[in-house]
Amino acid sequence: MKLYRAFATVGGLTLVSRVLGFVRDILFAWAFGAGWVADAFNVAFRFPNLFRRLFGEGAFNSAFIPLFAKELEERGRDQARAFAEEAMSGLVLVLAVLTIVAMITMPWLMYLLAPGFSANAEKFNLAVLLTQITFPYLFCMSLVALFSGVLNTFGKFVESSSVSIVLNLTLTAAIFIGFALGLHNEPNGGVVQALGVLAAGFLQLLLLWDGLRRNNFTLRLRRPRMTDGVRRLITLGIPGVIAGGVTQINIMIGTVIASQQPGAVSQLYYADRLYELPLAIVGIAIGVVLLPNVSRQLRAGDHAAVLDSQNRSLEFAMLLTVPAAVALALVPIPIVKVLFERGAFTATDTAQTAAVLAVFALGLPSFVMIKVFSPAYFAREDTRTPMRYATISLFANTLGSIALFFWFRKLGLLPHLGIAVATTLGGWLNAGLLWSTLVRRGHFTIDKRMVRAFGTILISSVVMGAALLALAHVLGPYFASNAGFATHILALSALIGGGLAVYAVAVLATGTMTLRQLRNLTRRS
Image 1 (tube, rainbow, N blue to C red):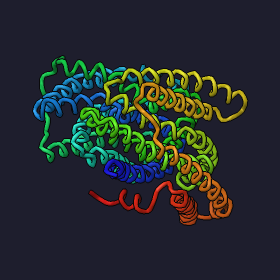
Image 2 (cartoon, rainbow, N blue to C red; image 1 turned 180 degrees about the vertical axis):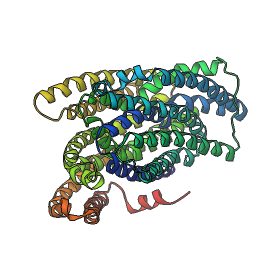
Image 3 (cartoon, rainbow, N blue to C red; image 1 turned 90 degrees about the vertical axis):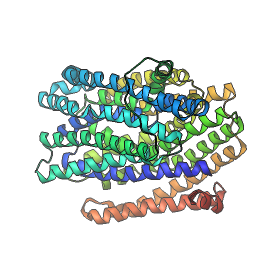
Image 4 (cartoon, rainbow, N blue to C red; image 1 turned 135 degrees about the horizontal axis):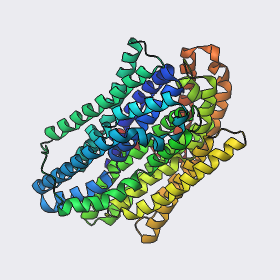
């Protein structure tokens, strides 16, 4: 239950962040809708946000944490500090050069990031400007990731799990500033948002630096040197970032292809934000907690504990992810309608975003499984195998996205629905490859408790799905456009609350989780 409590800590803070993120997205949809300014900002935010998720949500730490934990266990606190300082110094140098080069060459890079924007000069130029403003954000987030890795290895998860809260509060404040200046759905409103992203990066960096200070582990900048430790970090880090960030890379590729269709970038973004709520709460919690936990257990030679951690992580993931996937796939329209349909966001945007969300939902369990299976490789300092499988998945997703986008458009269907289909299939391919290899190597065996839990979770989710469809039918009139926002919120709350209640009863009735286990999970250490 200690592992579950750590999941609950990270997941709870991530939930707070995502709720704040939805508030931000609701306000953003009202102000910018899915128009050309929204498309330009979403592309500008997508690129540094890709790096935020690559570095800030575990991919960078897939290489750093095992090496840092090894230094800490075998050579002591001072040597671990020295390794972290060497890694930080090298990272600062690389990121400074990358940031300067990217900002200078952004007018040309935009042809790769959003080639479809070139047909609209105003949209293209705005996207270039906004991306130049937001790009230094990745510099801050990369250092935040390193500081988070240090704190997570010491079992401190609060600061690293709170950085997204800072981001969402800052961007929400930027939206209100734009409102106050009267910049609704205007290019200068996008500039205010981009400046908010930049400010958030420095605030997040300050939060993590203070976390290190309070834990008496501050780091100082050294002269960059290619030591053995840094060389090993690079060797593990490059494939680790590719493997750990394949989901976000897939989404980035989808954005590039979707730029060919007006409004598609923003609709994909809104759908992505919704299905990433459970992915963030569950997947990130597992990715942040499981890697340092398994790394320490492997260093201690406790392989039975490693297998138990993996099974309990998979059990926790499926307990929350499967019902979330069922709900998002069956009733996406009420969710999108209530959260986003107002102001510049139209009913057509709702229907198209909901269709994309339903397809994304089918791949949700696979993306969480990737978060469960990957630490088993990373903790053993094997980042190449996940990278190889991620590359296969990425290649399949890219070809599938291109082919299905243009095929769907030829058939008169929603073109970017093809991108969602390809992304979902790519996720299941990656998860399947990771799982089968772990089993073949003897690094993962599903225990009896997990087998039983998986069956009861499926049964409980089916029961909940049936209840959701019935509730959605009964509550249909309360989602009508003339019902009013307050009525919409109450109806959506009733729909979600009813589904959760049915699922909770089904989980307890099938024995998936007992009341005693639930009390132990929520009890603080």
